[in-house]
Length: 209
Image (tube, rainbow, N blue to C red; front, side, top):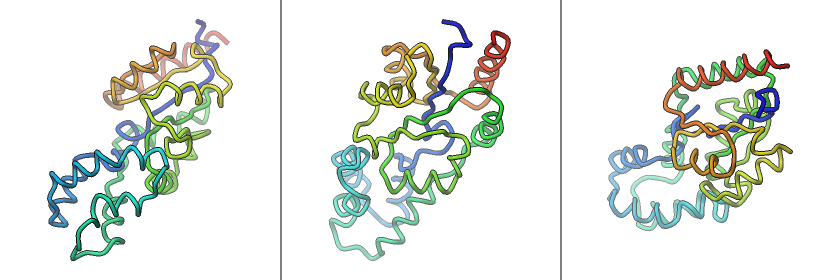
């Protein structure tokens, strides 16, 4: 494969550009803040969250199952506000990528697992349209990583072959799934190492053009 043949950079969002939208650390904090039984909450979360991430239920239905299955001394909107507040920008990567995209010569598309309300909030709050050309989000396409079909769908939408794509994910099992499908995939471990890979790709692309 020639570097000049590369067309698409695929990125995960949570753990790469932003914190995880509703990861276990956030759920532990929620249990402490709202006085919840974390063990029960975690079991119910694991039972239903995949269904939420593929868009089969909405956030209120998720909360009905996991949080408001008992009378509570707090209101739903306060809990939602806490959930949204757990999304924060990770140091370096997002701000740099927004600038780098302006002249990198690649299209950049997300492949991410996220429930719709959280996904929409994160796209708007962090102005993700400024670095992504499209979003392949589990809640919209009704499938989630590591299902190989989500990668195949993303490549179909991008009209790109596996050899024309590079993928970055903080979860090595997802990066490995992309590799099995023929994409060049990298396990994202931090801003500096991913930045170096991207700069090398850009440099080699323009040297070969």
